Image 1 (cartoon, rainbow, N blue to C red):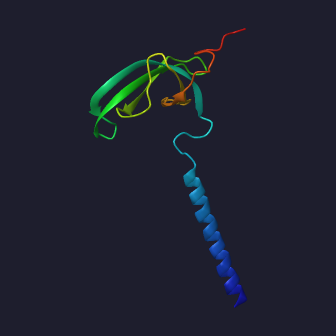
Image 2: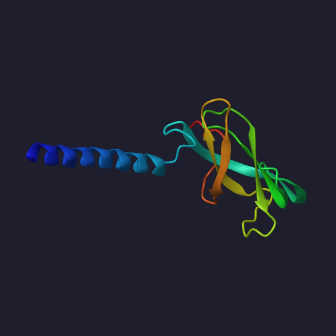
Image 3: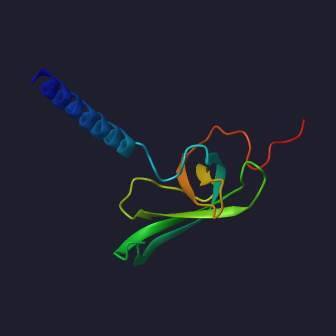
Length: 129
């Protein structure tokens, strides 16, 4: 009887451990694998809007489109990334604003705007001293 009770308790612990690992695995961001994303500075080159169009989901919307030009940390580029913001959004960008761009180092290169900065010393390649 003791063996059955301990065996059942052990089985419950194993199942609980598998459930916990699945939950923890779901909490990690799975969009871009670790080690394949880099961040660099970019500059807003165009702001279009308000534009009436469709979002990627196909839903009709009125949005402002922000287009950013950036170079990779290896000097490749220029690349462009665009983002659509709802018209009522408090996020405002103007031409010439400096932003952080997070990009995937693998091809095809996917990028996203990661925020605005004002403290980065230079854009593009680091200068040779």
